[in-house]
Length: 160
Image: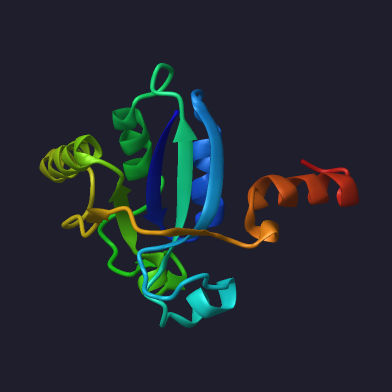
């Protein structure tokens, strides 16, 4: 198994997108890239920890490549927005790729350059490419939040 870490705004939807990929064996939402050990959601939301909301993706490289994960990353958020995604504003919602080794760093840089040249985005890509830092698992209620929410709606309303 291999690990990849991405930040692209609120971690709930990002996690849900990666969970649907064949070859992804596990996902964990959490906080990384900051200076405060063991932060809580409330601390990260205040915006003074330096952490980003992120998803750590465990995957089987025999079934899905890191390049495939990067390709998905570029499509599930707007990498041209600095410190925000949609209504979520702050450095904790930045676009970032946290690489775990030199191969991931090179692939991320090439992918970012390719995306920039392709003109698929409305402006310059501001995604940070930085070394993986300690990753702090978010509280249990954030894990697989989208799936839990859909399950609750189904159970409460018989919908979805």
